[in-house]
Length: 438
Image (cartoon, rainbow, N blue to C red; front, top):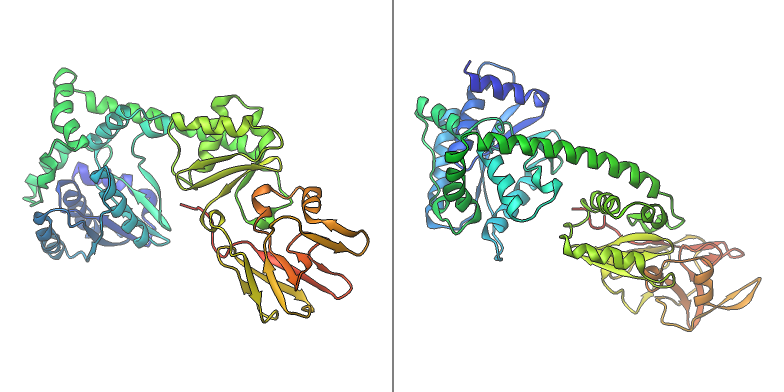
């Protein structure tokens, strides 16, 4: 067994019990060598089922021939191939758009127990570090590509990050492998190609170990990022106090524990909390966090981010996205109270116990509503909501049950949500789907 095969097998030891190993097979040098190594290893070792997937972006005429090339390689190796065509959305960066389309396809394909294997190597790692350095990335970005990360319901693994491109070329020529040379890789208008063909050769001419040193720096930064993650978990645990509005189903944190931290620790904790919810803000945009924290006590500030909004209300910060950002309908008739009523952009409502006599209608607060309480007489709805410290962003979408012009109930608020004597309550499920999980 070759040294390269031994290293690959060692790097994949933790995933030997996976359900499948699927190679992201572009047909280029890196993925061709990876697939060839794995196919040979599978003949001598018990490995998970091996397959390949080729993503066809359709960005250039030459690419139309690549699926057939990949199929011929897979036929020789006895590896099943799946070809997936994707649509690349137009945008400022074609590189980024193609990558997003590619990884969206990979995510949809990767099920529980699956491992997607990609062929990035040490040279790619050095380029990634340099590229992100030019973009002003922080520790998270400069830690470059991790050897593994969650993908879909499975895992993405990069088992060649300790292997140089030169080693892959030696292996490919020794085994007389054929691979695709993407013409776009020579286009130096693309940032990565410019770094690869212009910058990296100059660096390695002066410092021959430049790529190895950069890859080592990336490893140090990944370790530092791990420590920042541990610190964030400690700080977030202090802010993860329960809310009496857990039924909203929204991610939220108590604000006070966060504001006792230094500004850097606040950003670190919040970045880790927001990472699964939205694309993170750049350095300049973090001023929105300070504005949210410094607003007056009676204010309800909002920090708008790429994929949703962060609201401050009732002593907490709340993440809103999806339907929460859409206005609900003004009113909805409820012809059959025995079945749940779906509310446009606002989940659904249902009764427990005996349903009240109609005609019934769900409306939303417009101002001036009054509710009759058996023990207190007529009370202004605004004051009732204030007494219960209902978050500001909820007030305009709390379902209100009306019979004619009489306000009968306010969903989910104890004491206002039904009629004890008649034995019914109004329940609101705020959304029928997960909010903002990316």
